[in-house]
Amino acid sequence: MLIWLSSRVVALRRVKNVLSGDGGDAELRRAIRVQGNFVEYVPLTLVLMGFSEMQGANRGVVVLIGLALIAGRVLHALGVARDPEQFSFQVRGMFFTFTALAIAAVLCVGQSVWVLLQR
Image (cartoon, rainbow, N blue to C red; front, side, top):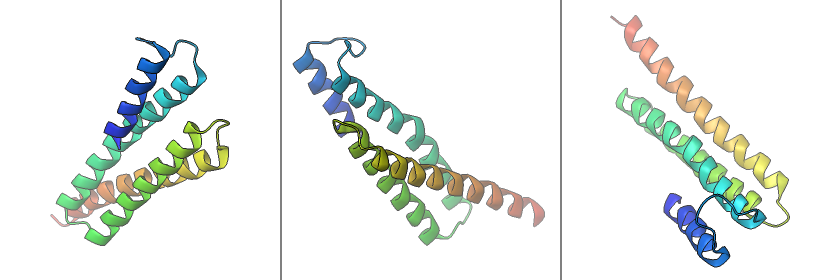
């Protein structure tokens, strides 16, 4: 998804002839923010999911976290990319993203605490 989002930014930069920043163009600004928002949330969530799985978390729970993250990112991208922006898509997208991030964090910390208490 990051490659697709980045390709979209590059394509818009070419069409709008903007090398840096958004050049004051609303469409390019939205594309840059969708890409940036993806980069801000997805890597940390994936790392937490990986740590949770390495600590023995239920694979089904990790898969559900991943599905929530994907749904959140797709909804957010659809909401922001449209003109006018679809605020309800953005809100739902961020809800799924934050939920995935929070559950992954709690699961990772919980697994760590559980292991420490078992010693």
